[in-house]
Length: 290
Ligand code: NAD
Image (cartoon, rainbow, N blue to C red; front, side):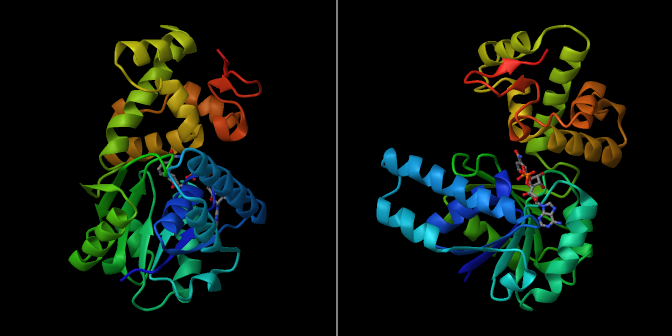
């Protein structure tokens, strides 16, 4: 039975997984290469739980108990007693492989490893570890405390036992599971990201401006967020990385990342997390940048 969960990467996904895991009663060990990211993650979790207390979704004692269950650090020895470690570092295969290589020697023999990757092959990531049968994809949605889905991806070597244990874990975290086979970007992002990329092409070709595209899809297709707003929310670097994985992995030109997306990423305009993307977040109301 899983009691202790390790998390690698304390960015928007890592802190969300830590938040939900701690509130679900698990002990959490959260690691990042950057100590500032860890400090920021605790502040974000604290603030988000505070909001849940104000809305009577979480009680004050549950909040303080959950915060007390989160331990942070930069040394992989932190994971020595974890039943499972969820990797949620930057969406870059080289980074993830390096992280997994540092992780494995610090794990218990029976510990499982999950990756929160949005698109990268679970089978290939598993092959860089000593335990492909205990390796799986556990793809949480952003923001983790709000979104009910966890997509679970079985690699070629993932055992049935690992799948069942991780499915139970996701359910204990209050989530519903959709099972996907291990093909580039799985189910949700295979469908969602080409739509976002097409919205960026629509902007690039001058069919509409940022406001018209997002208003069009919100009111015309009943989407809760416009595709460009959503791209900024996901992070434009992550969007580009997923499109690149689809393009390379399926070898079909229909997945070609829009050059305008590439340009925004090259400028460091990564969306909300850097304060600017298709919108500028410097004032109260986001202002379109095109
Ligand atoms: P992010 O940029 O907010 O956070 C990434 C974190 O990883 C940063 O804190 C960074 O310091 C850390 N990191 C980088 N290299 C590291 C290393 N070598 N060792 C330890 N930590 C390292 O990114 P995010 O949006 O949280 O995405 C993380 C993962 O979750 C990615 O694989 C992404 O594809 C996936 N994901 C993202 C979303 C989304 O909407 N953003 C949704 C589902 C899954």
